Length: 278
Image (cartoon, rainbow, N blue to C red; front, side, top):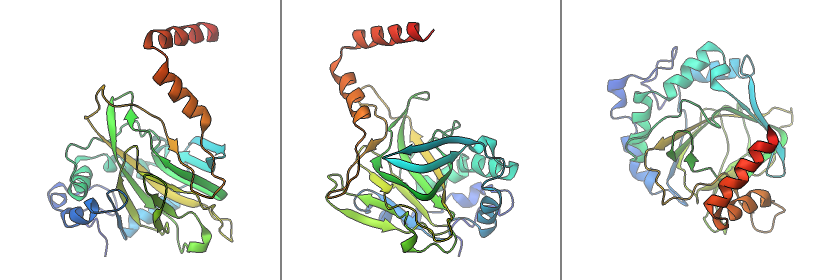
């Protein structure tokens, strides 16, 4: 049975009155999740919506970014604003009040704010041989000065088996244990709190026998709780024990420099860099 029965299967719009109570039954389980609050919900969207996503996945969605480095290989992202009109409509619905109300019901976090810029969000694809190392996400939406709070991932992989790789792993803060390994099956949603310690990723390389890629919808939500006492950081990659996982030391170096160098000197260096680039 479809979880989000209040979503119109043709438009993707969510009925506001029906959304008022959807998800409340999951709040206790969500907040009891280990190693951080999370929940997995199967049959999340109407099947007609999933069919549209698969039909238009590679049509008209200009590639926003491609990644190929030790921490993330064969990863591709597609912007919602460049997708097929039916999919643009769907993503705008994901940013609507009724849909956000469902997420607030599940998580217990009030005042969630969508991202009209879809920074890092949209369709994600990892092709055969690719992976995304375990990491904690960036925590500060700089242009809106908001704190990142929630990740929502919805998978689009038909007949996906564990041996095809690409499982979503949820790791302990100290990287001592993988608490969950979630197969990215079609129409399976995973929602979780985003903090500096919510370590997750799909480090097992995608290995589909027919070369089919791992596909997903990625959505991020924020609150207006950012303040000057919090330390802004970009994606923080973690190394699993007894593996060859690589930490991004260039990022670590920049963050250390930002902590140690006085702000007045940092501004001077940025000014000098800007003059050289002109």
